[in-house]
Length: 435
Ligand SMILES: Cc1ncc(COP(=O)(O)O)c(C=O)c1O
Image 1: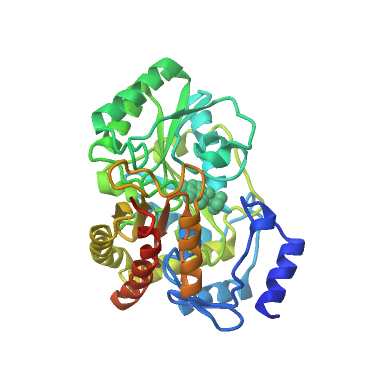
Image 2: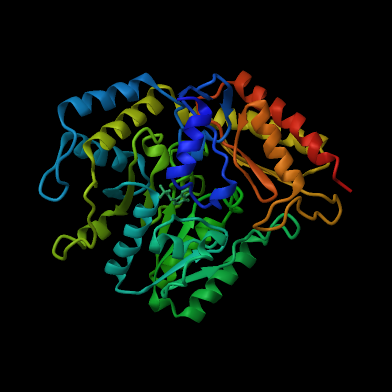
């Protein structure tokens, strides 16, 4: 099929996520390799967002493709309830090795939202408490509980669900900036007290907030949250769906602050999205609580052998190619490139990054720092920027007043500079509107 035919038929018979369907204009993609992908007509894009921040090892790694093929040839599926397989056994053991502290037991899901749903069920069953605390600037998935925990506008279309309470983040947008760690922790503790700590099962946090702006918590924040959770017997859930598996230069972002959460959720980078898989990991004492009483969850595709084989192969690639350390090293260069953009472009109001997880926030006024597009909105300048990226063959997410720099962890220095050269030219469009 031609690119136009693929787009027309897709638009006629399939739904695109989170969008007014009349406005969607998808890129037809026929193949991908490394940090690049191509349309059927051969237009090449550099992938500066690892698709949905998930293809961490880059596209079409032959070692993972082969592992998937080998597993499919031997065994595609068994029921996860009464049977088990070698890929499942090995993956559980491998994740126990990689995850922090005594997080040693895993329940496998199809993706991030289901991982979070199950984390909530586990926390409620373990503590006997009903409520889940979450932050406003967060996304935890599109299913019922996960979207109720989500704080950002994608939650607004859903009815409020009892049992979910939101707190403010340390960050308040490009105009107002950051609270101190102490201010932010005081706010969280006050909400815990006002809600009644004995009613709160868990606090879920993205270790570094992703879609809502690559918000790296100030030093002491994660440690402070851990201490508050311990003080009130609340479980801490680290949502590592977007930033686990090397994105920030550590296997899991929470390791930057030396904190061991009680539950950890993951997906995306776990298989680099070659096959869908998520997981919730739990500390041994929590797993032990399900020795006598039943575990409160189940999924037909839990522990899918093909997905587990893909995850094992992905992790092996990360280890063989030293991708976690590479993300850390390339991340240093990326933060220099981001700082350089900030120094030269008046439209750049803030840049943030950790490892290869980066964002550029644009402003239209240097002194008032008015964002280039309003919260949950867009503007002609941001639309023009997105159009320029597409024309020039750079793929990334442009959202509200910001855009991301989240390339695969395999990216070379030359490829990173190639992407930043396109961004550099694109920013002159935004600069023209700055007062
Ligand atoms: C932090 C975070 N949690 C959960 C999810 C949901 O994952 P999934 O789309 O695999 O259900 C996402 C997806 O982007 C995410 O970024």
